[in-house]
Image (cartoon, rainbow, N blue to C red; front, side, top):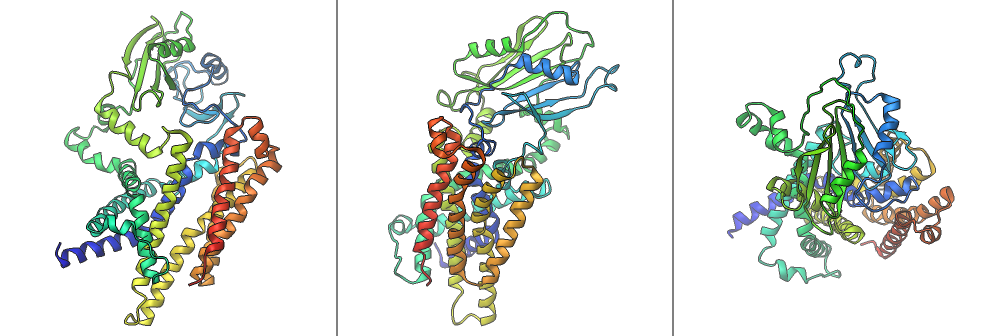
Length: 512
């Protein structure tokens, strides 16, 4: 490679990395904790549930209860399990009965507890686990700006990965085995950046590609709406299988009895290890009532096996069926495989732990890249004013990024002590606390102080997370173990281990 070409690629790699560094760190840090979203949610609610995607619910009893309260006649009702938790989402359309629709409530959305049947709004169902999950794609920023920002950061990150591979290609393997902690500072940071960057390369590449796909796919497909569909976006969504079929409302009450539970059982008998994640009822109690049962084969049996069956309630027959074993399409492969490899939810806790570690490794790669940039410009030939500016920029970067650890740990205690929580409480506590910590570390004007005391404070707070859980619920981790409340136990032990490791690192840090 010519020197000019190498220098262009090197500088574009550096610039693209620096520009996105803070946002990318936030995405990876919050995303690392997002692998344990379900465990965090259940720990926060003091619930331990069966680890399955299958909805554990008496559908007939639930629909009867909802009908008494909301009058479901003529409505479309959807019960869907998005995560492994004790609540399922309930979506109800407005009634299609034009004579009674004005007397009935309109469309509604809420969550229902599968055990005690209590109803919860989105706001009072909001948890720290949900907050961290949504923070990793910047959903807290006004929609759709945050989504698109996260998507374009993922694209720039992909560009940084590719240019980084090109830069280090010739010496990539050789440099992987080189680490010189006693050498000069830039050499140490460069060795760590190269070695850990190579370790996390496949992980980072996958998340750059899938992250960009999820966040800006609407922008990517927008031209096809006008070119291929003549502006008909509804037809595009139908072809991409993001919508359900439509069934005419006959405005005649069905005369025969029906059982949604029986349709679920019939579907499960069609395919072994089938998990039902969604029930969609069309035209409730109308003569043209249909029930869709949607789900997937358990991941231990088939990685990508999405299927469904649609029943005509009047006749009891299956009018449409998608076999998850033999009818997996290319479209299913693109959509579902990308989701699975991004969420890392098909390999249980071991895969989540590996993904968490690789996520934190990526955070370190980002920080080390910023430090290399700073040290490379801290030379005598660089004007003093510019050197101070560079140092100030990196100090702000570090303060913002590293403050996430203590405020995240403190938020775990806050949501356990302050119950019930809401989205406004979590937003205010996390963002205001994060801002105050950031300002404090910026004012200190000391890189060593920022590194050491963000880790030290986060570690100390982390040790008190299991203590707060024990005090507030009585579920000390030994009680959780004896009572087989493994999701509660996992978060307590997770924080004890993480806090111990970061405490050890903070004590080993020496001022250079």
